[in-house]
Image 1 (cartoon, one colour):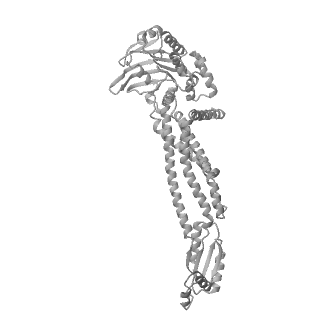
Image 2 (cartoon, rainbow over the protein chains, first blue to last red):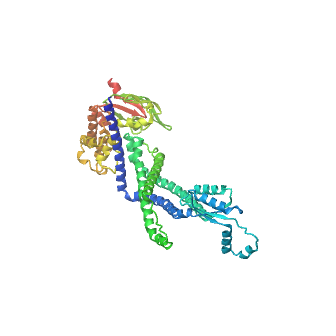
Image 3 (tube, each protein chain N blue to C red):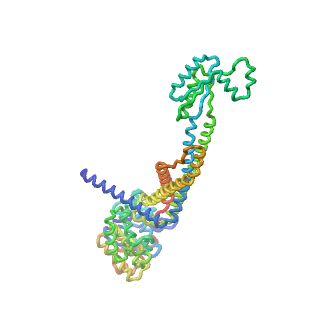
Length: 316
Length: 223
């Protein structure tokens, strides 16, 4: 066989393969059209099962982006050695200010610290009883915006490393708590996502199993006529894929509808807080992810059903 | 074309086919006769590997079926056209789609399908019924659709299980003549039937089974 002939033979086989897949696909679509009720029901169940975690994750994403500016809103108070000279304090403040992670450094001398203490506490009289100022000089460091948590930790460690610094205190606990809570919520949502994913696989698997039961005679005859396992399997796998992708499309519509319904009250709330916050949608990549997830789960469910039930249907 | 060598088939305790040997040549037309339960259907089922024999060996086109791996079974079946007493047509599809199914299974290009389906339907005289639903056809017509489906891929072997089971004599003769035509074209044709008068009248080779054994094989006498 010459190379050209081989290439032709290959092209013919590829063509036949593509044609068989095309026909399976057409047959599957035809089947959806013939029984739109049950097919739509299955797709709806998948759509809702996918929309729930997608919606939750979307809400978490929105909260995340809303709290992002606050995340770097923390400040670190550096308590310096009590007898550090003013010149050294200034020199240290200037040095810290040069770091790229640091936005501004505020310096409070011992006297200023005492004045602040007097202003904000009721220990006015108690302080007067002391013969000397007990407070150390303080540098208040504001980090630059958009610092990642790990970079923040590194910066704090670096600040602590300076010999003139006695102690570092961070006031960012509440942000950390918020993020810990969100991490917990996210973990929970992923757990629900996993369960719903399994539910989708089972729903598709059961639908395909019933489908196999209903088309038993057709499968038997196809095998009698010399249909290979792959040939018999193909339309069912396409059905599963179809259910999954339809479910994904429906889930996208549901999530976007939910955003449309929630947007006006969220905008009002944001305007009351003088915020320009807007609910973000799942976007094109989110929709693509939903479709792909739906398709994959559908394929998995139908694959399981086909693997378990199709082998049992043999000509007899 | 088809060789049985001391073949037996047991279902639990019951022996459906016992120690059967024969050879059917290319293009030969053979009737398998006997009472119901004599093992006719069991014998036919061994050829497309709907069952595997309990003992002995079956060879089709020189291939020992015992050595045929499971994944090659579809290819074996594509070379064998089969018709059934109860037709086994798909009720939710037109006559055309039923006859086209073997071509679809074999991956014949779509543009050839229409021509070959119509050729097969023309052969059995049902060209005008291609868009009918099988359920609307008479028993004889359904049997002929089944034959069209069996021959549409032009297989070298044709098996028919009680093709005239529920038909009146004139229709039965018509169906048998149809099979004789395919045999004349070189198709090896094996027909299981209990319609003895018709078989006598047609005068082809006859293998008579009795309790799973060969009682008469007319080919042996003529030799």
